[in-house]
Image (cartoon, rainbow, N blue to C red):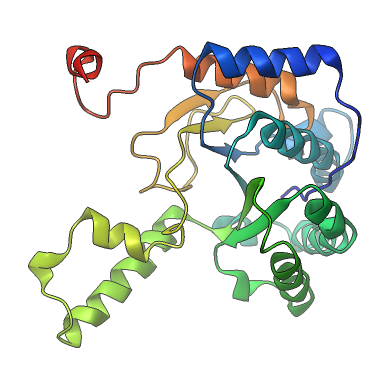
Length: 264
């Protein structure tokens, strides 16, 4: 899990030009989701413990968040801690919880100063009380911000999300407020924890693994997938621009033919 940090580092003219080029060469994704993978392997390759990799990944969170805000991306969702991650060694999980609290406590003001709104999805109630307090406070403080929506997926899994949505619909059927035949894609979508968030246009996975690891299973139906061998602690805006450039070269057909897309 990586936490968030923002700075007011001056943007270089070269970087600004790269962003302008991306803005004119195609559509910048409205929503980018990232599976931040490779922290542990990055740390191990340097002879350090896994938590060292998570701490190093903070710089990547900062840089990618800043770059997305500058590019005009509306939503950035980071897969920070999965439901399955609770099964990791206790010392690693404990260290991650402490890292989350420390970062939220120190960086909420910077999020607010940068007009970035913090959101979370997942089973937040499973987190220690200290984590829950810091999360709720950061969400409250940044609730009116509009430049970028930064969504942290914490104790989240796609199967859990679909299951909890189905349970809600089942209760409505049981109570006679809904007929089974009325259940459709739109109803299921409305009960997911991402109901108020658009589906990702682009999903990026670092570390070279070709799987989505139980992340946004329903929402990724037509997302464009980009996989890089780069470990998350080494992933910076240069790699983000490459991912967006790849996305802009693709034809999003949503089940239709190329001719239908052109005709439209």
